[in-house]
Image (cartoon, rainbow, N blue to C red; front, top):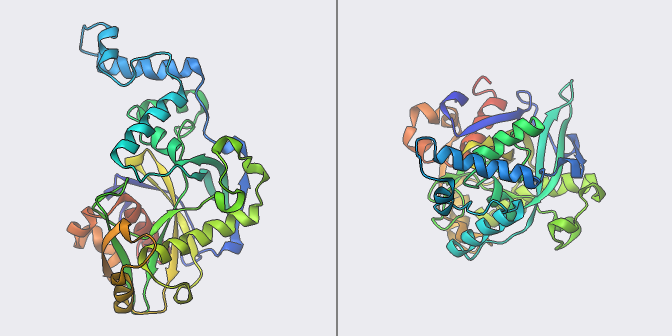
Amino acid sequence: MDCERSPDIQISHIVKVCELKPSQSITVYLSSEYNRKIPDFLHVNMIIEEDIRIQTDSDSSSIATVISDTDYHDLRTTDLDRIERIWIERLQQNPSLFNGTKFRVHHVTSTDDGDRVIMYLGITDYKEYLGTNWAPNVKNLQQKGIEIHGNSQAFLSDALGVGASVVTEDNFLVLLWRSKHCAEAPSMWDVPGGHAEPKKLVGNKLLKEIDVSSMDRSAVVDEIFDSIVQEVIDEVNIPRRYLEKPLYMGTHRNNTSAGRPSLAFYIRCCISSEDVRVLYKQGNQQEADESTNITFVPLNEVASLDTQNKDLWNHLAPSAKGNLTIFSVVHGFKKP
């Protein structure tokens, strides 16, 4: 499963082959320094003006005319104004959206000996995520991040996602067909997944009210690992007693959402694929509306999906491609 065949993903961290990590092998560092950078007035103007220049490269129209034809008609627009406008537009399209706080991935690495995984995390929310990673001018935000901070992701939310390769007792991997109403990757096959929730640790506080450095670091690790188990329960309807503890495999970034990071986990399930199908079809799981079908991929076919089953591969969400790519490498089915 050659990453070069998947331009919509990039692998940013991966554990050694067959050395998947339990929660006890994860260390997190929390700081507001790892939050996204807020562009000041001058930088916002530079970003907006560059959008305008791109659109007027071969056009002699006045800037004023171009501005009136774009979302960025007001050079006084602030970063938060732009995010709010995008959020309102998204809400009109999907009224079920909820602006919860999320952890933000600054970067993930391993100790030199590979024994521990180190995660550097800040705080963000879903509104920031849609308003930056999915902003119309996101490429310019990334370019300015490089120029000003040496980091293409500096101005982006990069909300931490979680996803799991769930493998059944009879060695099948679980995929779900995402509902057409999902905000991201609708009508595609995906692994179960979602987000870790800071509110589990600090309550329903607004983003501006949270001091991420004051959180208990061990509790954050526990929430990240528990969140992926809860997502499998809520999306697939597998009771917790049938799920082994998750193991961390790596981190991948979704290039279709400007490099949004997701942590990839492996969860072994102690019931068969047919038992899982029956549980899923009961339809009483908490997040039943997020998917409309379930399928199972034989474990010995996962690593060759991109070459031997291109139809399925092309209908995988980027989050699934990233997860299955990492899964194949860390289990020794494919070379890095």
